[in-house]
Image: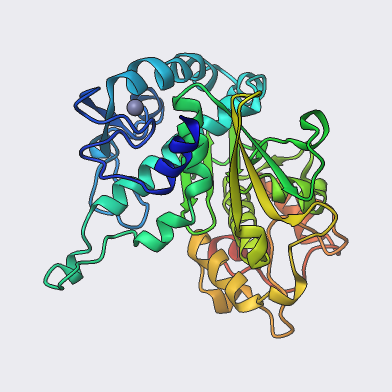
Length: 373
Ligand SMILES: [Zn+2]
């Protein structure tokens, strides 16, 4: 029964005939229209008439970004999540209330937006290829293949099953070796800078990453079998307990998405098993636990600058120094966290700080404020 479920997820069906979350056909469960971004979230941030700034959705308003999913997923399984999370995200200090939610709840919720966005883009034919024999989808099928981790996680939740990840060669001891199949990071957002919207959303289908900022809370989740959490979270420890400016949150999301591009190919291969005892799918990464699959030799400063520039809307050339270093708004030269200067007093201190990177920041607005007074 559930081995069949695994195979079914690996062959995603047409979203007009099957629910992309639970896999049930429309003949079993008729479809209902679901807002990919929940209405309560749109209302909170005044997004109803706002245009989505995500590539491929440029001409759409948030309220029109919908997809058909079955009534059971919409109203029951995933509806329960919305009922739990809406009060947390709309509370006075959402960082506080959202932080009290368990990681699985947040990861499923983010994964749902991420996966539905990908399926929605995949369902649309790329206008430029409409006369071709096989027109390409806006999000090509090959990209969708890279999102199967998220898809499997959604299917497990939608059908009331668990999901864990493990490594090649792990002993069969669930208590020690089965882990959450994602890397989830939560941050407090510094909301003092009134020039920025209270909401932001970024995702990358190729690397299976999603980031969402809502008021004082920022969440970044990678559907990666927990690899980033295991091997790279230490690299970002300097951010622990710090409040990130909205610009810093975007930059950090871009770094985390980039990190996933230096993974060895074997770490991206996953074998799925059904564990009857746990009623769970176990996703086994095809590299051993003792080996860090993030490879320095795959690092490419130009690709890094390109990704960072894409998300922060800067010219990659302005971010990359000649010796291959990236300008960052997150860190001082000594490796400690660099608080984003917002008030005049903070700007004055920042201007006299010798541990700041000497290269002027690329963003003209920051440069003006920091270096030109
Ligand atoms: Zn469903």
